[in-house]
Amino acid sequence: MLSRVASNIYWMARYIERAENTARLINVNTHLLLDLPKKMTFGWEPLIAITGSEEGFWRKEQAADEYNVTRYLLVDEENPSSVLSALSAARENMRTTRDIVPSGAWEQLNDLHLYVKHNVNSALNKRTRYDFLKHVIESSQLISGLVAGTMSRGEGYNFMRMGSYLERADMTTRILDVRSANLLPKQVQEEEGALSLSPFDNIQWMSVLKSLSGYQMYRHHVRSRVRGPDVLRFLLQDTEFPRAFSFCLGTVERCLSSLPKNDAPLRQVARVNRLVQSGDVYKLAYTGLHDFMDELQLGLINVHSQIETAYFGGDQSAVTQTQVA
Image (cartoon, rainbow, N blue to C red; front, side, top):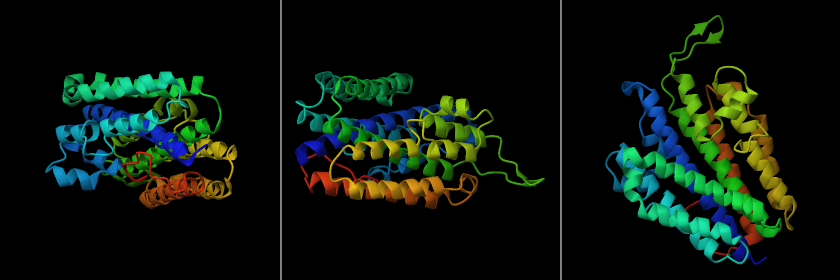
């Protein structure tokens, strides 16, 4: 496969995943703010940090209120990470690889791009935003389903899967990093050696799970109340949940194993896997989580760099508007 084609497929998948993740993030944040007292909410600014958009956002806006943040993350064409920009980039990358990607996926992506472009008002209106976000999420998942159900398991499929799961792993670390760092101040006190937390603490850990569509599966695996250490173990180290960091990394590893010239990328994946499995979730739930997430994100950047060097050969034809992390 030509390096240009491989790069386009890889980035197409990353952008589709990015659009879905951003839509889900805004949807969950909207519901979270309804569950917390107004005086205790942390607002919309954390979403800017999660998506790594601080510099561009503050260059344009004076306040991180609901309207400004949702507009910037959903439909701002000057923001390369907005849902609209991500879908535009995904569409352009898929357009150049239409002979490889199933035609149904192309049609669905084209329809989704047009829907977002023509429904800006629905995205910004509180009353219609839920339906808008639901359509983006479900359409993105439909594209993934069409690819999974109709695309041959060759090199193109492996590059697409690597792109999707690297992007998904990156979003998991970002949500854990910023969400956990911005949890409500804990009223921590020693009570017989146990930690007594704010009554709203578990609500925010629940929002972390829901941001990744993991609440139901978490309750299936962990049959107790939502706790920080258990959430971290589930979202970082679980190998069965499709949005857990370890599962994503394992998928990338399996895709690489089917490709040539995979020694350097596989070694980097192994390094990151050892790092995440060595994390002490009980300590990280209360201290040091930010630094640990930084290490994981740096590890993902190195995985991407090894993939780029091995397979894309410095090709710059793909629409890659933003940095990996």
